[in-house]
Image (cartoon, rainbow, N blue to C red):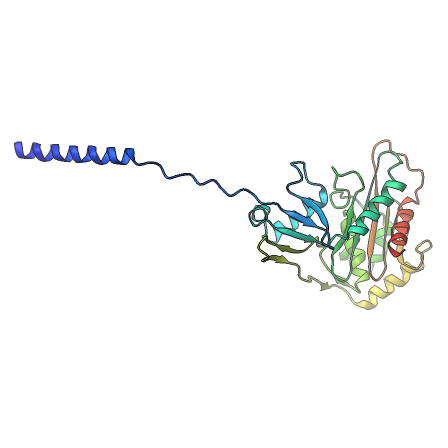
Length: 284
């Protein structure tokens, strides 16, 4: 019995020593996560559009569109922050500035009008212009879903799948860009490439074109649109307020005006005026 007690006592002593040693052992240091790196969005020419270090404000609709596209491509924002990514967008700096200037001069003096201009390169699906003027809190170009005017839908009688009962200005722009591309539908894209701080390529855009109707149909639609008055040789739909949609071989452009409560529309031809001045300025 005494021998058993001595063994039990020794076990208790050893357990106590082990517990003491474990208790005295310092906790491993907590390694803080690495500080997020700057994420930079660039225009297509490489000039700066936006930076995550610019401030904690809510990003404008265009920036949100870019990040949403990258998220769908399995390149989430958190991974961009870890790698210090540079995102080269499709947005043309000059065209974006011209569109905003034209809207500001022609439309914003009229009370409570929201105006968007979108422009797409038909050959690539690249979105070159995506702006709603100074109304940065509202996604005028892609977030406003409404019923297109009958005149906007009419040219697609032979290809009805391109239009829907309700569409955003960007959706309408895509439909007209498809005709401009000879019947090749391309999903609109906002990103050309993504590069990490170490130079590695995280994402690169590819052509997503899909023929949906023949060039003969596209040519017939184009010929009919060029006959409309006020298009100045381009293919467009006029007299479809609050819309103007049309294209040249190089550029498909849509203008949309959203009337708020109490809006004053001095000129129902305003979409065409904005459309023509934008194209004329870009050509000049």
